Image (cartoon, rainbow, N blue to C red; front, side, top):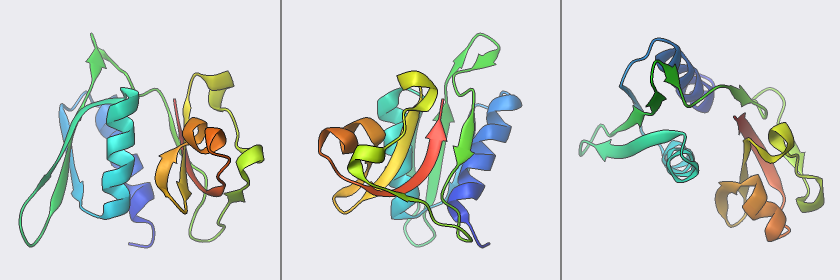
Length: 128
């Protein structure tokens, strides 16, 4: 697999459309950081790490009736074309209604937090 983050986002998107209550993906620290941001921003209900040697990341999705809270996910920086932005150039997703996830020297954080601290980095994805 060349892009595990894209795989995680695709699994979330597909499970959300199929109204599946939870998704299991292979664990990495980057994916765990993205999952914690999704939980903090209210896009998923819970995230947990399971297993000792072969760790799995279990994500419980959030729904409003028969409609998912996640409306869209878009991978921005890909292995074939990385996208880096400065702290002053961080984009606003849907006029501030969505979330941009950025990998900065101080860790993975939302675009709003990175803009507040004037930190740039790799623009991982957009979520709305």
